[in-house]
Length: 426
Image (cartoon, rainbow, N blue to C red; front, side):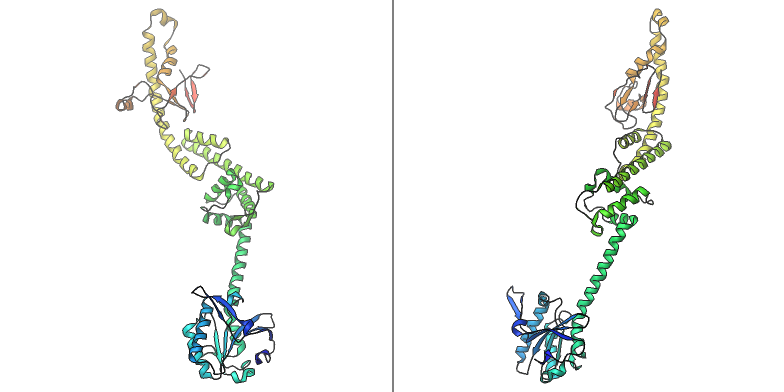
């Protein structure tokens, strides 16, 4: 076939396959094997190394309209099922060479009804009797009005593939740049982790304290502290793919683990500072004592715990006000009770003892201790009226409203007790 020679300058025929070699099988919608068998398949190499493909059908005017339609339908199905991609990088164009422009246009019209030009470009020319000229003549039809030479047709068929490759390359470069940004910019990595905070990306592999410390870092809106920046840089280096939060295999090395441990210590110190600020604002209370105890025991508070702690500290302040009032009332009432007990004694006993000797016994009877809150509970006569409690004996904790109270014991020095910051003296 004359297509083997006569190519424009800068092009060379890299491969030429006749019908037997050019046959391409593909599976149809019916599940059966189908095939297209062009008269030839050409591969033309450009100077820059790109390869242009083409499936050639040569018609010398012997095929009937039914045969041409069947051929067009076969190529249409081949294109829809991406049969061309089974052997090639992109779907080759169909180059239909026939005996006249009228016959070429008729075949193109049939192809438009059976094949999507976006899936497979079909071009036709009426130069079957002068194939040599068909290589360079601008008489190839690719639509109702479009025309050009063979090189334009071959390049036009490859263009969508090249553009897709360029888009993919641009996306790849963009993703690579984003990966590098996430590894080198701690603030960017924090925002990325926030967007994926509900995804399980294996943060548990870093250890429970490091995982909690990172969670706190993500929750905070303030500018990153140095310990947080260093930890996020170390974390970024541990990702095989930070864009998709895929950690590299293996455990963190010693240096990175040290940085993550430093983040945990930083967050613990910051939370202890917040507790001290709350204590100065609201006063000491059970909620702050418990939180401080957890931190000193090596834990970290969740961000939600810290948020609730502010409310609990405010609640404790109100409870402390109630406790102060009941404490004051109790001190006044126990003095009267102690004096009454002293007066009820015989004269000899009164001379030997004073009213203050009865205070400890009264405290043991009236006071209770809430172990969870580490607070003394005082009698509440007003509330006892409608809760059917004894007005002279404590029955609930003023902070947690708990009723499972322990007996109160004075301090070993015998001068009262100091519990939760509260000192009770005779």
